[in-house]
Image (tube, rainbow, N blue to C red):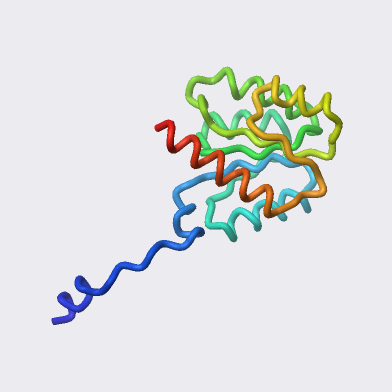
Length: 147
């Protein structure tokens, strides 16, 4: 009797966080407080989150973990975000992974440099968390539509 009740119960729609549980986001940020803020934001949205504090670690982690999207600062110790993005874009295993620049560099020439390096979106700090979440969701949806 219990099985019949359970199988005939209406299915509820999945909430946004439940739908995002299949996505893994790599957050690359050298400032620990900002890295933690982004981790908490994405986890609250239901994403699994990986983190790195510099460009070289980000490239290595991206190759090892194959995240579904990467949110990266531009000003990183060692390998900066621009060069990390270029290396990521050269890797066939990471083809099509959305890259979001999230940086305090807010001049037009930096935006162009980021897009030329392979970023799909360019957002400036201070972080507008709603815009960042919406940008990430849109890029993931676009990637899913491409198959």
